[in-house]
Length: 400
Image 1 (cartoon, one colour):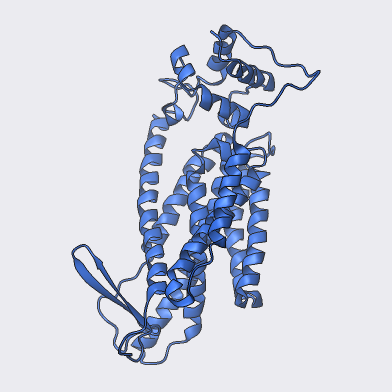
Image 2 (cartoon, helix red, strand yellow):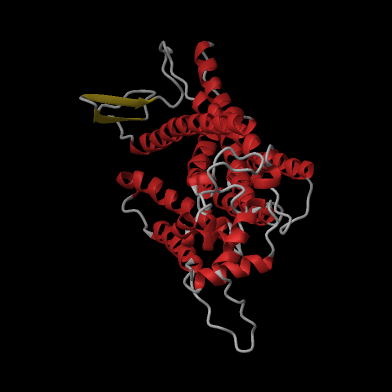
């Protein structure tokens, strides 16, 4: 019953996380697009920096930007913050539910680092807090005024975080903590910088004084940073479904390449918004992003290695032996009624408890075995010899 309740908590939290994440990212993308598409008014008016006309849903809309606020504050004034806060809270709940409650299965891989449950959780939480603190200090330092220099330093530090996480946690745990670190930076930007900047604008208008422009400048900078972090974060959110990425030998390099590729593609889209002012957009950010993603796909593509002269090849096991290993090491989770504690149903609905079910999943089984991501956390203590036996049997055509 406990596993069943955890499954439902996971489902509902994941559903909520997806819904509010769509709301936050959608609003963020829209306002970046809107800000970059504003045009000067044909009849200039004091206090208005630009406007945009749009048609949607059977009507016309006219959006105008008042950089320092209108003379009289309108009622109601809509704020956009709870989408961000709820996305982080639901994501943190999921992180605790999946990766901390079941740390031995999802977070810790003793072939990567032999650490205890408490140490692993402390490192995970420290990564979230430490990532924000370092990022915020850099933005507030003199380097924060140099966007290119700041971007270069942040790229190095983010790459170092990816490398470090992949040498401490399981691949899956490392990828999700990398994304959670960036997501924490994004929502902390909203809470500690963007919202205070907006409150200063509102407070100044209520008090009848000219607002301090600096909070708005800082808020704008952090908002732009958030939009570049978005695609890498979204990649890590879905990466747990693709063992070929987090299970790769050099998974830290895969993570860095995918993050940089996503950020470069987003950079190109943001630049395109400004074509009416800056002229044609350089295709290089898009090219670099696509080349990085294609390069990762090419490097990770499955390929057969020619036999090495003199090397001892693993014997092809008979089917009875294969079934015995699968029953002992895999079926405890991948069956109609899993016996492994913490699993109410077979992960991803993959069941291997009959010959027919096993054979229908052989390509996926081989990938999971080769990348060493299954058995998850090696909970059932599959040996290297057993792993080699199963791979050799599949490569030989899975003889009956």
